[in-house]
Image (cartoon, rainbow, N blue to C red):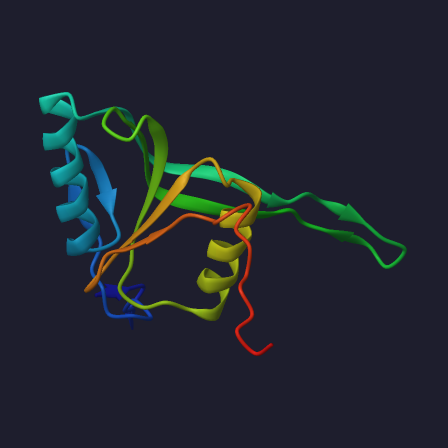
Length: 138
C-alpha cells in the first residue's frame, strides 16, 4: 500500500478488509465474525458486537502528570445461550507482550466473562477460583 507516496504496511503484514459489516483487521477476524454471525442466526448466541472496549486500569493522576486509563478492545463480545454467559473473542495472529498483559488483566477484572483466543489454536481462558492447591512435597 502507498500513502502520500510512502509505502505503508501493517507491522504484522495483515491486510485490512472492508465489508458491509465494517472494516476487519485480518482475514482471520473476518472469518471469525462470519462464523459468529451464523451462530447468531441459529440462535446459539445473542447480542453480538464488535470492537467492545473494557476498562482495565482507570486514569491515574500523579504529581508528575496524568496517566491515561488502559483499555482492552475485544474483537467480539456476545452472550452464549448454551453456556449462559458472556463471551469475549480475540482473533489473534501474533501475540504481543502488551496483548498478553491486557489479556491477563481482563481475566482478573472480568472473571464472569469467558475469554476465547481464536488463532492457529483456540484457547479458552477462565479464572479458576476456590480451588485448593495440593502440595505433594510433604
